[in-house]
Length: 223
Image 1 (cartoon, rainbow, N blue to C red):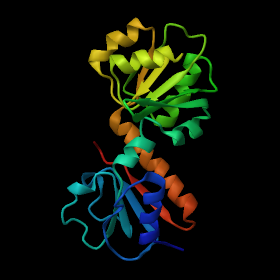
Image 2 (image 1 turned 60 degrees about the vertical axis):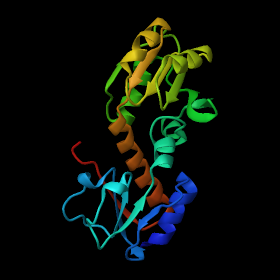
Image 3 (image 1 turned 180 degrees about the horizontal axis):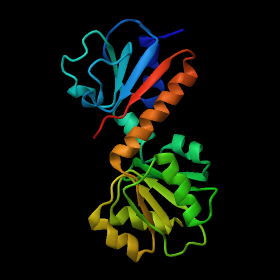
C-alpha cells in the first residue's frame, strides 16, 4: 500500500496549518517517506519516494526525482515547545490550559501525573531522549508545568502567577535564569534541536497511523 503525495500535503495543511505543504512535486504514489529537519541531515541516497523537510528552503536542486513536503511555522508551534498537545497526550498531562502573550499562543500550563520532581523529570527526559540543562523547583511537593516557546522574565512571572513551579522550554536564556531562580521555579531546557527531532518522530507516528501501509524513515542527522 502507499499514500498519494497530494493527500500527504493535504494532511499537513489540515493538521499543521501549513499553507503550502507541497514544496516540490514528484511521483504521485508514496510508499516510503523520509523525514528530516534539513537537507544536510539526509543520506546521499535516501531509500524513499518522497521527503518531508522542516527547513526545505535549503534544498536547492538536490534529490530531483523526489517529491518534497514542507511545514515550518505550524511544525514549530504544534510539535516542539509551546502549545504542544501531542506531547501532552504522550505524557498524560491533565488540567491543560492554553497560554497567550500579546495576542499570540506561546504555550500551555498543565499538571503531569507525576507529582514528585524526580519522577516527573525522569518521564520527561525519557520521552525527549535527554535535555540540555535543568534544576528542581524550590517547592518539590507538587509539579505544575508551563511548556513554553520562549523564556524571558515577563513570561516567567506570568506562569508563576498561574501556579506553575516548573518551566519547560527549548533553549535556556541566560538573561532569564536569575528571574527563574528568584521565583523558585524549576527549569528544564530541553534543547532546540532535540525538541524538533521529537516533533519529527511524532509526525512520523501520526502519518503512519493515518495512512496505513506508509513507511516512514526519520533521519536525525548529526547536528
